[in-house]
Amino acid sequence: MALPELVTATITRLRDLLRQQLSQRLAAADGFGALLGRETNPDLSSPSVIIEYIVPNTKNCAFRSWHRRMVKTAQRSEGFLRADRYRPLAVQKDCLKWHTVLHFEQPHHLKQWLQSSDREALLKTGRDIFKSYKFTSFETDMQGWFSDESGEELTGLGPPAWKEILVVVLGLYPIIMVQGFILERLGVFESWDPASAMLANNLITTCIFTLIVMPRIVRVLNFWLRPAHRRSPLRTEVVGTVVTVLAMVAMVYFFNEIA
Image (tube, rainbow, N blue to C red; front, side):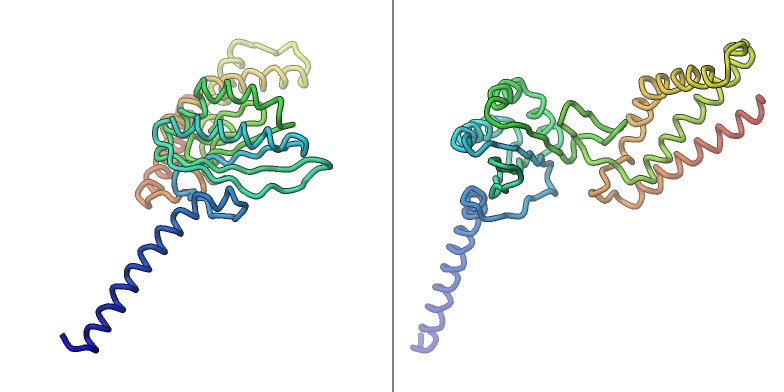
């Protein structure tokens, strides 16, 4: 091999070796960067939970120790990918706001950890350290009627508003129609004053809608009620929309026939 070719080959090998080492160092830095205060971009394409803590300055050391235990608990859970902790922000007098992002492989892995007894036990000990906390998790469920909400915990990022409107009308319309027919024929509330009758009527409608009808509609249309930040295939969007609209049209036809 000629000298110029040997030099070129050597330089190419060194360049490839340096590039490989640099990639490995950057990958490692992504995991430790958040702990050192450097911001990293959370991979929200995977099921993730963003947790916010308000911590008094006097308890920052205790919080760091508690946070390490919390991450270790998550690491023992199935499907755990990584944890990112971000530089704290001064938001209140003598307090800092900490943010943590935990990533899991699948939505059910994230939901399993959020509902685990280990996390619940650790959370009880943490309440003596931080003043308050709240989190938003992605890819676990939906918002409002489409999600689980407990205290300051909100799980899920809901579907687009137009889908929520269609689904609410889909569930509410038949309840109002059937309830109106039944109450009118039974003569219920006829002796009541209009305001009281309307209140009682709305209470009945809301209970049936929230406890019975809406959970079943969400379960059936779950394939279509995807979180707004996650784009669904065009076929899924079309099928879900057509099914919802056709159901409304069928109900209008049915109630017109029996009216």
